[in-house]
Image (cartoon, rainbow, N blue to C red; front, side, top):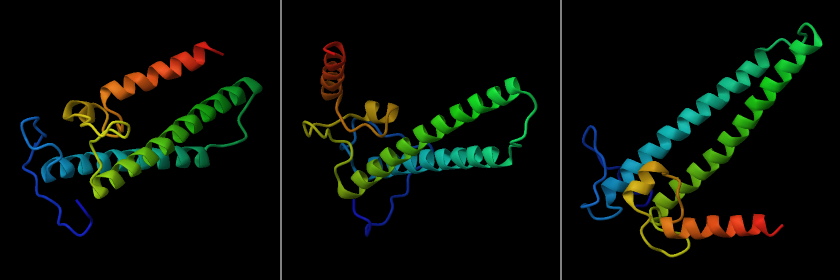
Length: 144
C-alpha cells in the first residue's frame, strides 16, 4: 500500500484472520493502526518522563535521598532510551507497510505470520530466522 491510496475502513473489533489473503489491505491497515497507537502511547509516556524530571526539585535532603532520586532518574532515562529505540523500530515497521514489505521476513522473504505479528508487530524475521539469529547470538556470547 502506498501513501496515495486511501485508508481502509475496518469494522469495529476487526482482527486479521489467517484465512484472509496474507497482508491484504485490511491486514495492513490493522497493523498500521496498531503500530501508530503503540507509538503514540510511547511518545506520551516519554513526554511524561521528561516532564517529571524537569519538575523534580534538584535540592533534595540528605545523601541517601539524593542517591535514591538519582537511581530513579537513571531508571527513567533508561526506560526512555528503550522507548526511543522502540519508536524507531515502529517507524521502520510503518515504512515497511508503506513500501509493501511488512509481514515478510527480512532474511528469507517468507511470511512472518499473523500470530507472530500480533504478538510483536515490529518483527522483521519469521520464527525460524529469529531462532537462528538467537542461536548465533548465544554462540557468539559463549565463544568469548
